[in-house]
Every structure is written in C-alpha cells, then in structure tokens.
Image (cartoon, rainbow, N blue to C red; front, side, top):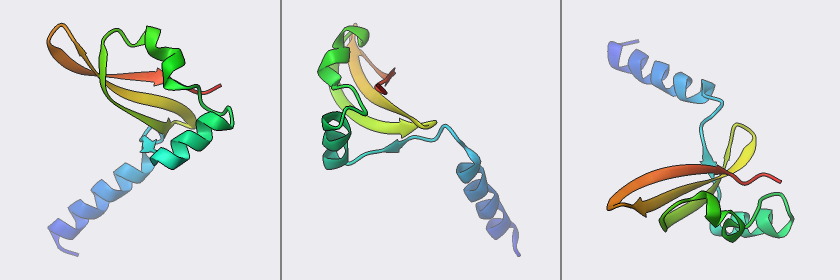
Length: 86
C-alpha cells in the first residue's frame, strides 16, 4: 500500500469514528421528523438564534436532532447549532 492510499484510508476511518458527525436530512425527511413530533419546528426555536436566518438544515448529530443555522448578526455570518429533539 502506498503512502497516498494509507493516508486516504486513515482519513476515511477517522471520519467513520467521529460520533458527532452531522447527517443532514432532505427536506422531505425534515418535514416528516417535524410532523411526527421527533423534531421541533424551526419557528418555535427562533428566539434562541439571535439574528436573521439565511440557511437552516435539520440534521442528526450524536443521535439527536439539531438545526444547523447560518445567521447574519452585526454584519457577520455565523453558524449556530440548536437542539431540535423533543
């Protein structure tokens, strides 16, 4: 195995071992999670965001539903992660 293959394999295994890696849902999956009550609607969590939402995704991270939200506040864009599990 050459060095490139070994390095690629190590990176791939490191990614698999990360329990907190987010798996973001499709729009249909997100709607289903909210409709079934597994995840809170984004609108009910707006008070926790503190800025104007420019992008939001419902993801599963560490076994929990979370919203990964890009927010504009004070002229800067930042990412906020909010627990959406019920």
